[in-house]
Amino acid sequence: MKLLVVITSYRARDLTFACLKSLENEVLENPGIKVGICDNGNEDDTAEFLNRAITENNWQDWAYVLSVMPNRGFAGGNNVVLNDALNSEAEYDYFLLLNADTIVRPGAIAILLDVLKQNPGVGIVGPRIEGIEGDPQVSCFNYISPISEIIRSARTGPITRLLNRWDVPIQPEKLPDRPDWTSFCCAVIRK
Image (tube, rainbow, N blue to C red; front, side, top):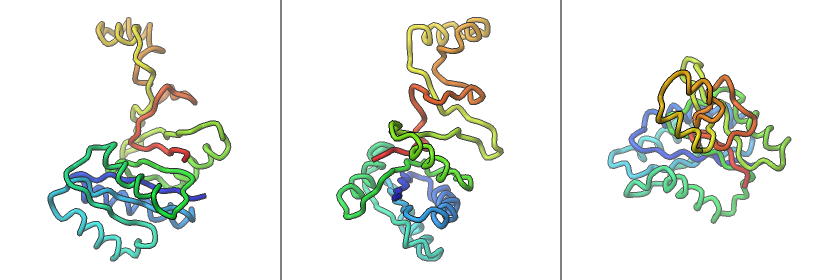
């Protein structure tokens, strides 16, 4: 199993470092993980800072930085690392798109990969997203529909409760196994 974690860093130097730190044990526990960071249009010393952190923490076997200018946005920054990986000799089975402000909980990557391994027909897996205190965040969504637009326009408790199953954001305590779409702040994609 080979996984490339893709992080796009824009004005998130210290957050990106904390994210890398949280990935350290995941990499050790799951051989085959590499981390590619896109220094996405930062006009400061972010690339130098991250490269120095990688060297000082002995992460150079699994982490690297690619810099682009100007900022290419979320998709463009991810594509910088993905295109580099797809045009390299490396053969990745999975790609994990991860926001720079993410702290990965111990064992999370193994769980996400296990879901993909046990479900060969699934192409993308997203976890329940939690705040720093463990409070669940909205991370799964229904498609927009005429009923969801009625909910949004009405903005009243009774209508929202009555039509709740059609509301676009799915409340964390009601996470489905197969939402219409998931947040890409953390998503594993099968190659």
